[in-house]
Image (cartoon, one colour):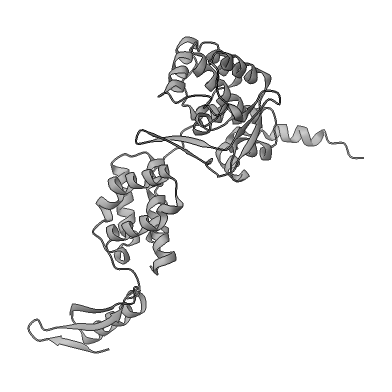
Length: 352
């Protein structure tokens, strides 16, 4: 492990060969050390900690990462990843060597996003995407560590989580009575009474509705990617059957009668841009109820079930969550936390 004197500069340098993470022999030279032992120590540290790590640029590794994960991901996931990379990751890290990106670099990138006043949730999504790329490098390409883990989650000072916007049963009743378009009215009704996701609603076919048993089977999701329809399995990859109340089934029957000779494999709601959003806007304008997003109907259903005292496990299954913890994390503030109510319930217990 020799070091050499640079007679012209009066400094020391190290120059050596090593085998990289791909098994290729490479030469490394590092100059500018004041002392010989400093050059030797740098070479020693490089050989112990760095030489087997991927030293390609982040941009080059991202191409490799994308090639690895593409067969395993859905089209809309790949589209989102591409957007994040093009607009936020590659401009910041693209020309940096993968094994030289530090936790400080990640923190500075987080701060830049915060200063640009992006929403905290959006910044956290970008951070998760960046972390996933580094995790892939650690797991499969011998990168020493993920700098995103050391940097920690991005945070904003005094940031408060925005409240979930939803309708109470009374608000829903006012809105639904003011929607004239039967297609939009039926879609809003089904979303409210089932809690299904918008993509699941748009992928629903008539064959999946059991009018006699008052159930709907959910096993697919619908997205529009670059103007084309893409039908995939549900978000969790699992199917579920949901029972529906009479008020919802009656609305579905009325809508079914308005459609000319529907085939069993036809979509219940043929795609039409923003027809649900327009229905919500119409109903809210006429009723005076606050507007919510389409996903707010799912939150409204969860709120209704919780207010009725439905078991959280059943709520989780009905919503199609992969874990009960997801339901609790999302809707914990919907559950009653009145200490007096708890004591009243405890006092009502009679020991025998």
